[in-house]
Structures are given as C-alpha cells and as structure tokens.
Image (cartoon, rainbow, N blue to C red; front, top):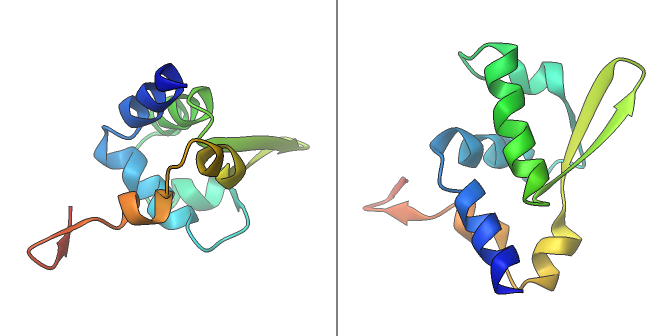
Amino acid sequence: MSKQIVSVFKALSDETRIDILRLLLGKKEIACQELLSNFPLSQPTLSHHFNKLIDANILNERKEGVNHIYSINYHYLQKLGIDIKKIVNLKKGGELI
C-alpha cells in the first residue's frame, strides 16, 4: 500500500495536476476539451498530465466516441485514506498553494 501512496503523491507533485484536480472537484466528470480550455497548454502536454494522474489511479478515464471524459477516483483515494479535497485545497497564508 505504501507504494500506492507514494505514487499518488508523486503525481500530485506538479502544480498543473493540482489545478486539474481543483477543476474536477465537485464535478462528476469533465470532458478533455473543457479542461483544455482552462489551461494555456497544448493538448499533448495536458495529456501527459492526465496520464500521470491516471497511472496513479487518481483519475478515471472513459471514452465517449472521440472524447475523453475524466473524473476523480474518490473510491481508490478513500481506500488509501487520502482526502483529495483537503490536499488540493491546501492554503498557505490564506492563498492556495
């Protein structure tokens, strides 16, 4: 189990990935195109970040035609004892970090 937790925290060690999760919080799922419009990144770069989160089992991905739909894997994170909402919304001096 410790390898799984380490994998999750490694995936969360990037600010862009934290921002992706912030956008997903409170939403059942989001299409890739909607997420892409929120970042000044190319589609391949954003896909790289999605893949890191998927590989760590933080995100679920499903395909609907050519669209990729993402959601947070709350069940897996809860099984590890990780409250992603608290981690993603950590604050330092009143500002999100």
